[in-house]
Amino acid sequence: MLDDELDQAVALQGRITAFVRAFGLHQPDRTPCGTPVPSSEAHAVGELDRDGPLTQTALGERLRLEKSTVSRIVSQLTSRGWVCRANRDGDGRLVWLELTPEGRRAAGELAVARAARFADLLRNIPAEQRPAVIEALTTLVDAADGQPPTAEVRAAARD
Amino acid sequence: MLDDELDQAVALQGRITAFVRAFGLHQPDRTPCGTPVPSSEAHAVGELDRDGPLTQTALGERLRLEKSTVSRIVSQLTSRGWVCRANRDGDGRLVWLELTPEGRRAAGELAVARAARFADLLRNIPAEQRPAVIEALTTLVDAADGQPPTAEVRAAARD
DNA sequence: CTTGTTAGTTGTATCGTCGAACCATGTTGG
DNA sequence: CCAACATGGTTCGACGATACAACTAACAAG
Image (cartoon, rainbow over all chains, first blue to last red; front, side, top):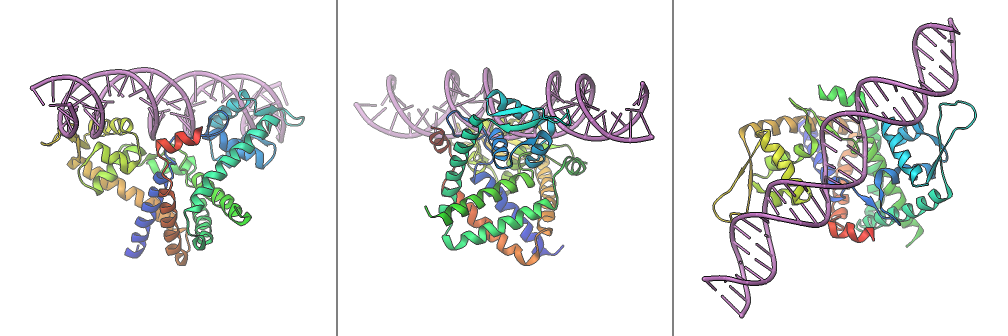
């Protein structure tokens, strides 16, 4: 590995770390809404709002979460009355998740709150640099997708 | 707000969300090392390794964590024998944190492991785009710093 | 109908963080 | 000089987020 590459890797690491801290991704953010909503639930609701009814595994793949974790999140959402678990005819094992009208309303409010947060962030980026930043993030996501931190990878990395 | 800006905000949000998921920032990552080290401890050690002895509040500011959280992390690190708490002469309230030789060794190993992770990421970014990505992240950190998610801000956002 | 697979659930463990209450130790103004 | 305030840390209790393992129910083949 060239020194130049090593320098770049170090820089990348520093920037990402700094961003995580500066943007508060560490913190157990209670997303604002009528009642405070845990962010994991907010993510799930957002996904269901965008991509219609999903099974739990499908939702888990989108969120990159373990099925057990998804099951718990969904339980919380149903007890909130935002999601309904349905067994459509066909495969009896599948649990189809769909937002209730309440859930759709909540999803809308959450989307607004989130948008405001990101609009603030955007406002602090000089206008002429915005496209470049968005472009760069796209590149970064693609790069991260190339080395998905699945359970196997993480387990291997631990050894 | 212009529609264009709104579109950009939505794009930004999507990219950041995608990156968080793709890079696994959600997951309780046990950083590899001799023994698995919780990532919060790894961050603290890294900071102490870079910026010499620090007081706990100083460390907390760097990590953007509450003093109670820092106290707990430091306790774990001292019980690991990686950090020593010292009371220098002067202000008797201050607790100065310094890595032990063991701690410095561990910090080195952790740095290597982390560097490998980011080198992998870098390798998935086309070489000619790397400087642009790093530059964009710098811009993003600055933007995030402009609206630091401190306790007051988060509390205000909740209301 | 037995064997194997797949979708979800539940139990257990760990990590990560905050806020409030509390205790020292300093600092400052009367 | 001492009372009142400020500051750095610690402890306690709570909650969020996640994983893995063991289990059940439903399906799929042979």
